[in-house]
Amino acid sequence: MLGALKTGSLLYVLSKGENPSLNIGQILNVSAPRPKIGGQFMPNPLQTEMVVDINVKVGDDTKTFANVSANLNLVDTGEGGYVISDDKTAITNEVERLGALSQNVLDSIPYHKRMVSACKQMMLSLNPSLKKESERDEEIANLRKDFSEMKEMMAGFAQMFKTAQSNNSIFGKE
Image (cartoon, rainbow, N blue to C red):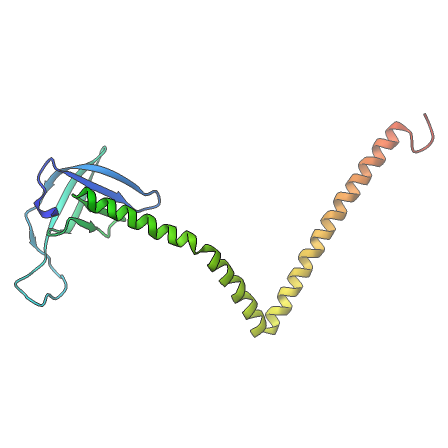
Protein backbone atom coordinates (compact mmCIF):
# COMPACT_ATOMS: atom_id res chain seq x y z
CA MET A 1 0.00 0.00 0.00
CA LEU A 2 1.22 3.45 -0.92
CA GLY A 3 0.67 4.75 2.62
CA ALA A 4 3.22 2.25 3.94
CA LEU A 5 6.06 3.43 1.71
CA LYS A 6 9.29 4.42 3.44
CA THR A 7 12.16 6.66 2.41
CA GLY A 8 14.31 4.80 -0.08
CA SER A 9 11.52 2.49 -1.29
CA LEU A 10 10.97 2.09 -5.02
CA LEU A 11 7.94 3.52 -6.80
CA TYR A 12 6.86 2.78 -10.36
CA VAL A 13 5.83 5.96 -12.17
CA LEU A 14 3.89 5.45 -15.40
CA SER A 15 3.40 8.53 -17.55
CA LYS A 16 0.38 8.24 -19.86
CA GLY A 17 1.03 11.60 -21.55
CA GLU A 18 2.05 12.39 -25.13
CA ASN A 19 5.16 10.20 -24.85
CA PRO A 20 4.22 7.34 -22.51
CA SER A 21 7.02 5.99 -20.33
CA LEU A 22 7.64 3.93 -17.23
CA ASN A 23 10.24 5.02 -14.72
CA ILE A 24 11.31 3.67 -11.37
CA GLY A 25 11.75 6.32 -8.73
CA GLN A 26 13.05 6.35 -5.20
CA ILE A 27 10.89 7.65 -2.37
CA LEU A 28 12.26 10.80 -0.74
CA ASN A 29 9.49 11.07 1.82
CA VAL A 30 5.86 10.16 2.50
CA SER A 31 3.60 12.26 4.71
CA ALA A 32 1.67 10.72 7.56
CA PRO A 33 -1.75 9.41 6.50
CA ARG A 34 -4.57 11.91 7.02
CA PRO A 35 -8.30 11.92 6.25
CA LYS A 36 -9.21 13.07 2.77
CA ILE A 37 -10.93 16.42 2.91
CA GLY A 38 -13.90 16.88 0.60
CA GLY A 39 -14.04 13.18 -0.26
CA GLN A 40 -17.14 11.30 -1.28
CA PHE A 41 -19.75 10.42 1.31
CA MET A 42 -18.87 7.10 2.89
CA PRO A 43 -21.69 4.85 4.13
CA ASN A 44 -19.80 4.48 7.41
CA PRO A 45 -18.45 7.86 8.57
CA LEU A 46 -15.84 6.02 10.65
CA GLN A 47 -14.25 4.69 7.43
CA THR A 48 -12.79 7.92 6.07
CA GLU A 49 -10.43 7.59 3.12
CA MET A 50 -6.87 8.25 4.16
CA VAL A 51 -4.42 10.04 1.85
CA VAL A 52 -0.69 10.78 1.80
CA ASP A 53 1.65 13.07 -0.11
CA ILE A 54 4.55 11.29 -1.80
CA ASN A 55 7.81 12.90 -2.93
CA VAL A 56 9.82 10.72 -5.29
CA LYS A 57 13.07 11.19 -7.20
CA VAL A 58 12.69 10.03 -10.80
CA GLY A 59 15.91 10.41 -12.73
CA ASP A 60 17.07 13.97 -12.12
CA ASP A 61 13.57 15.23 -11.29
CA THR A 62 11.63 15.28 -8.07
CA LYS A 63 7.89 14.72 -8.36
CA THR A 64 5.26 15.27 -5.69
CA PHE A 65 2.02 13.33 -5.77
CA ALA A 66 -0.49 14.91 -3.37
CA ASN A 67 -3.56 13.35 -1.80
CA VAL A 68 -2.77 9.81 -2.92
CA SER A 69 -5.02 7.10 -1.46
CA ALA A 70 -2.96 5.50 1.29
CA ASN A 71 -4.70 2.12 1.22
CA LEU A 72 -4.19 1.34 -2.50
CA ASN A 73 -1.14 -0.05 -4.28
CA LEU A 74 -1.97 1.52 -7.67
CA VAL A 75 -3.30 5.05 -8.13
CA ASP A 76 -4.10 7.15 -11.19
CA THR A 77 -3.04 10.50 -9.81
CA GLY A 78 -5.17 12.49 -12.23
CA GLU A 79 -2.47 15.16 -12.42
CA GLY A 80 -0.27 15.08 -15.49
CA GLY A 81 -1.46 11.62 -16.53
CA TYR A 82 0.56 9.62 -14.00
CA VAL A 83 -0.18 6.22 -12.55
CA ILE A 84 1.96 5.25 -9.56
CA SER A 85 2.43 1.96 -7.79
CA ASP A 86 4.72 0.25 -5.34
CA ASP A 87 3.80 -3.16 -6.81
CA LYS A 88 5.46 -4.44 -10.00
CA THR A 89 2.56 -6.81 -10.76
CA ALA A 90 -0.01 -4.02 -10.43
CA ILE A 91 1.93 -1.66 -12.73
CA THR A 92 2.50 -4.52 -15.21
CA ASN A 93 -1.25 -5.15 -15.32
CA GLU A 94 -1.88 -1.43 -15.86
CA VAL A 95 0.62 -1.29 -18.75
CA GLU A 96 -1.03 -4.35 -20.33
CA ARG A 97 -4.47 -2.77 -19.88
CA LEU A 98 -3.40 0.50 -21.51
CA GLY A 99 -1.75 -1.36 -24.40
CA ALA A 100 -4.89 -3.45 -24.98
CA LEU A 101 -7.07 -0.34 -24.83
CA SER A 102 -4.94 1.42 -27.46
CA GLN A 103 -4.87 -1.70 -29.64
CA ASN A 104 -8.68 -1.82 -29.52
CA VAL A 105 -8.80 1.79 -30.68
CA LEU A 106 -6.43 1.03 -33.57
CA ASP A 107 -8.43 -2.07 -34.51
CA SER A 108 -11.60 0.02 -34.71
CA ILE A 109 -10.21 2.54 -37.23
CA PRO A 110 -11.58 0.74 -40.35
CA TYR A 111 -15.06 0.65 -38.79
CA HIS A 112 -14.95 4.37 -38.01
CA LYS A 113 -13.72 5.22 -41.51
CA ARG A 114 -16.68 3.30 -42.96
CA MET A 115 -19.01 5.06 -40.51
CA VAL A 116 -17.77 8.52 -41.55
CA SER A 117 -18.18 7.63 -45.21
CA ALA A 118 -21.67 6.20 -44.66
CA CYS A 119 -22.73 9.26 -42.64
CA LYS A 120 -21.55 11.56 -45.44
CA GLN A 121 -23.67 9.59 -47.90
CA MET A 122 -26.67 9.69 -45.55
CA MET A 123 -26.30 13.47 -45.17
CA LEU A 124 -26.24 13.83 -48.95
CA SER A 125 -29.48 11.89 -49.23
CA LEU A 126 -31.06 13.90 -46.42
CA ASN A 127 -30.02 17.27 -47.79
CA PRO A 128 -30.23 17.73 -51.59
CA SER A 129 -28.29 21.01 -51.51
CA LEU A 130 -25.34 19.19 -49.90
CA LYS A 131 -25.52 16.63 -52.68
CA LYS A 132 -25.40 19.37 -55.32
CA GLU A 133 -22.45 21.03 -53.55
CA SER A 134 -20.65 17.70 -53.33
CA GLU A 135 -21.24 16.98 -57.03
CA ARG A 136 -20.04 20.49 -57.93
CA ASP A 137 -16.91 20.11 -55.78
CA GLU A 138 -16.18 16.74 -57.38
CA GLU A 139 -16.63 18.21 -60.86
CA ILE A 140 -14.29 21.12 -60.04
CA ALA A 141 -11.69 18.69 -58.69
CA ASN A 142 -11.93 16.63 -61.88
CA LEU A 143 -11.57 19.76 -64.05
CA ARG A 144 -8.50 20.84 -62.07
CA LYS A 145 -6.97 17.40 -62.54
CA ASP A 146 -7.68 17.48 -66.29
CA PHE A 147 -6.23 21.00 -66.55
CA SER A 148 -3.12 19.95 -64.70
CA GLU A 149 -2.64 16.98 -67.03
CA MET A 150 -3.08 19.27 -70.05
CA LYS A 151 -0.45 21.67 -68.67
CA GLU A 152 1.98 18.78 -68.29
CA MET A 153 1.30 17.63 -71.87
CA MET A 154 1.79 21.17 -73.21
CA ALA A 155 5.05 21.51 -71.28
CA GLY A 156 6.17 18.20 -72.81
CA PHE A 157 5.26 19.39 -76.32
CA ALA A 158 7.09 22.67 -75.76
CA GLN A 159 10.20 20.81 -74.62
CA MET A 160 10.05 18.51 -77.66
CA PHE A 161 9.67 21.53 -79.96
CA LYS A 162 12.66 23.30 -78.37
CA THR A 163 14.78 20.18 -78.65
CA ALA A 164 13.76 19.65 -82.27
CA GLN A 165 14.31 23.30 -83.12
CA SER A 166 17.77 23.31 -81.59
CA ASN A 167 18.63 20.27 -83.67
CA ASN A 168 17.08 21.96 -86.73
CA SER A 169 15.42 18.67 -87.62
CA ILE A 170 11.90 20.15 -87.82
CA PHE A 171 12.85 22.56 -90.63
CA GLY A 172 14.81 20.14 -92.71
CA LYS A 173 18.15 21.79 -91.93
CA GLU A 174 20.87 19.31 -91.10
